[in-house]
Amino acid sequence: MKIQILQADITTLKVDAIINAANSSLLGGGGVDGAIHRKGGSEILEACKKIRARQGKCKTGEAVITTAGKLPSDYVIHSVGPVWNTGGKDKEELLANCYKNSLDLAVEHNIKTIAFPNISTGIYKFPKQLAAKIALKTVAAYKHKSSIDELYFCCFDQKNFEIYHELMKNEHT
Image 1 (spheres, rainbow, N blue to C red):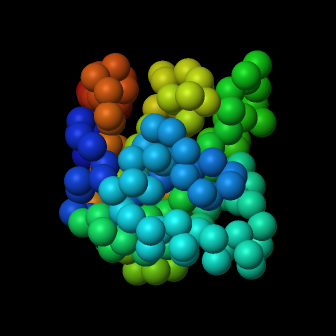
Image 2: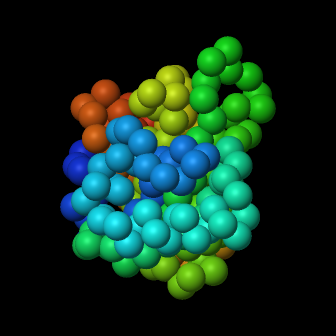
């Protein structure tokens, strides 16, 4: 699996699947979640409503998959990241589960190219440095990674981009 870091708007990427840093309602929200729902159109919301009717809300750390609607990708994998508040190991495990469960869905759906945003580092206030370390460690340890060709960490802001770039550089020196 080739891992790349880029600074971009995840809704513009032509990959098999993008990850949505969703909230548990799956009905859209702010940040990347709102952007994905707005740009992807009503098909994503309708698919999320069907999932909710079947299973209820999506739990923190879990992931579900829908169409990408009008987005250039084929799928959106919605994963609910933890709200940091006072932090703790449980929050770190929940964030790792977001990456692992999203990757499990990707493998299950034969997805070869995938892009992750910086889950929980916006309004959920997860410390960016710690979140990046967890994301990189979880992806590196993923047992089925050979079935995914390319994985992108798509950073919307400069700070996350710099953090990921530095962590990746240090890993290879």
